[in-house]
Length: 357
Image (tube, rainbow, N blue to C red; front, side):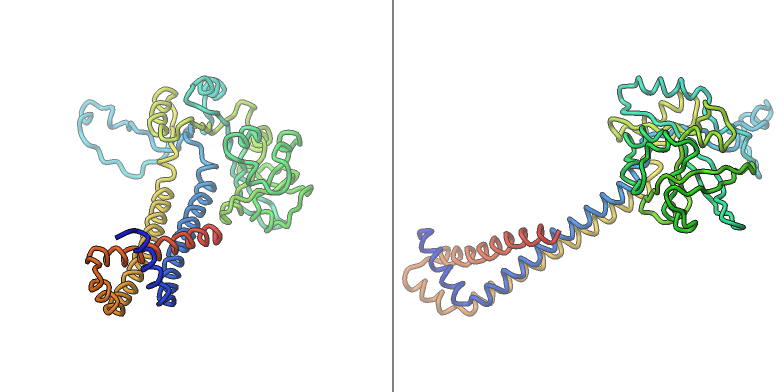
């Protein structure tokens, strides 16, 4: 039978029961629209959370970890050298947090073609002085230019200019949570106390908001030189070296390579954010499972309405066969009806889905 005749008969049958046709098409539209909206929402949520964590996390971090010595005195004796020794109440060794020869290490890393950039960092534990109350805080000493270039620092500073950390001496960018507690404004001076008991007056030049409230209550940023003054260290003091790579997937292997070469502790981004990546994967699986369920439900809706249409049109089918139409021709008619409903509903669903986003 010609396609023209199949199309005409299919159109006549759909128009005869236009309400059922409309219900089936609306069901498909609804399912497709919410499928696209749900996936778009979950993808946007994952990108937001990834940006909060991954944009601010170096691919490889070099530092001196505070751990007990891997070789204990008992392991050095000949009598117990090959034994498995159980030692309790181990205390960390008196390890210096400063990275030895940090400028030379940074220079070496900058020559590595696998590295996009390197940013030094210093972490200082302080107390924000608020009258008779001291608030726990962490000041991150950074190079604002490199932080902006490699770790999207400018995207999280919503009030003030990050480069003023370098241009204004003894300045600080407060976390939004800490600023709210202290009622601080841009241009105010705040007092912080180091763990050694030294007090410093810092000028607030901006506010930082990461999106995680507990971090914003504690974390603030200052220049490398200001943080070195707070710690009472010299201008060569660096406690962390942050590395941005060309290919993030190479981070675990390169962390091991750098650890062995520089004789320093190294941590890759996959290890540092293993739980976070698991959460992103679970959210994606849930969103796809719900979306596919919606599509299956809409498919069964078309199937049920098509069955109802077939049972209601048994007399029409009998007339078609009596006038010379073959069984395959009748099947083509009803398949074309279902395809028309599905395609029309899907196209409308795609339009509404992208609109809802």
